[in-house]
Image 1 (cartoon, rainbow, N blue to C red):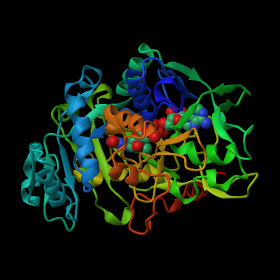
Image 2 (tube, helix red, strand yellow):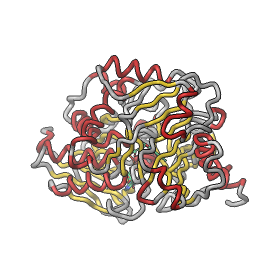
Image 3 (cartoon, protein in one colour):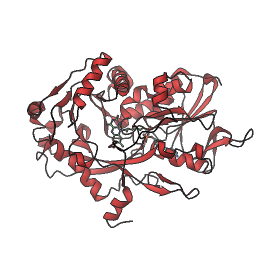
Image 4 (cartoon, rainbow, N blue to C red):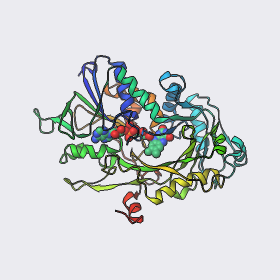
Length: 440
Ligand SMILES: Cc1cc2nc3c(=O)[nH]c(=O)nc-3n(C[C@H](O)[C@H](O)[C@H](O)COP(=O)(O)OP(=O)(O)OC[C@H]3O[C@@H](n4cnc5c(N)ncnc54)[C@H](O)[C@@H]3O)c2cc1C
């Protein structure tokens, strides 16, 4: 099928869907492109992981592929008028008891990149940025990674700007809850994907459907045909949640936001992956995230299959965060600043749902079981920064032009690694934390 002549339906307007819509519209001005989401892109609050106050934009990666792609994305964050105004190159300070600093520098060297990045000793780290990190938890840390060429972006604004640019190019934005992928079964038992059906029963027809539906993707695939196991995500994708919150600063404390870098600390390691904190000047606050990742296991009513899915309430119940997860996000302040901001109130607790894979890789792939169906999601808690370039690669996948290494790394069918060493893989159940609070 000629990609230029196709009609496309993209489910989900997070970074994967928005960027895909934009790049598709740029490449195929004649194509009919529809972007469907349960929320309007200007809605004050959304369930998308991509909807946020701000997000880290960095090329500091242990994985060289993502380092390369992030450098490419960062070039557009800096220079493209669509994103430039939302990008703040504040720097990143990354405290890791592992070899992160060295690996990242090796990657930059291998890629010929020359960011303003260096490693410093713990003593030096205590003094940088006016002593902001003097009280951080440096347990077992040998060197601290500092990259003054990294930063953060105003997330929801950058996302809105991307969708608005796609709409200006002719993309139709539809607000609807997608209930299922639809199949044309006139020529075979399983059939070809021919669009989606919405919760109110409408069929939105398209030649090609791209699922950019984030944490909801496994549920959507099972609901689409409960008996068709090859269609389902199985162990490939898991819905996972992590807590974020904001910390309002007093008038006299706000000076810290000026020139403050993003801080990330992998300590205390026994809690999980890493905590982080970054400036949120628009609210005169910090934004922080926690270390504990949760799943929400439910039993599918038709197949009795167990899967993790965001809570079924329209807003994923994301603003109702159990006490232990609120406490977890509080560790960000302690672990990065010691006692400096001790006792500060946190608010706007949000349990943010994301699609993760066992290897932390995205899935950008045709669905091998179903013609006309494509998957582009699974940010695995690091996808936002790629907003400017994600759609370019999704369009390459749709046109069968994706480079072999990316095809392999992002394939639907790839060898699934053990999740044993993956600190982002959720092992705890949301329901257990809710029960601890004495609630149902
Ligand atoms: C707390 C937190 C902090 C993060 N911080 C960073 C960071 O600092 N830097 C970074 O690079 N990455 C970060 N990430 C990761 C990043 O946010 C995600 O990887 C990325 O946003 C995922 O994008 P997506 O398009 O796949 O999914 P989403 O943004 O979740 O979008 C999916 C969309 O699909 C829609 N949808 C789903 N199902 C349906 C349906 N049935 N019908 C209609 N619409 C549907 C949803 O409404 C949603 O809008 C963070 C993630 C979290 C949770």
